Image (cartoon, rainbow, N blue to C red; front, top):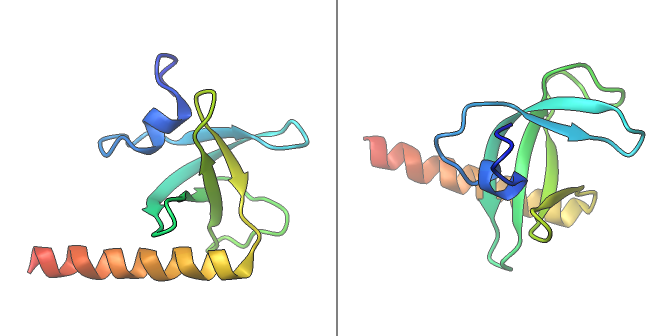
Length: 104
């Protein structure tokens, strides 16, 4: 991660291809691949991240969804509310459909 950029800068940088390293609550550092940044109608933003290493409780084909907290350079909070997770996923699918239509 570029030391001059905040987490928020990196998450919203459309040209960023580098992974993101997060420190978990237990102090373990884990590398993630950024799949997407999703804005919801409520104004909240979410990051869809895929761990690049095996994590307990996370299958190889699963992603993790984090709420982006824009304070003090930014931080991420793992989202656990099923309704919010569903809304993020639905918005992600809608955005994919929009991009697919633009490419046609």
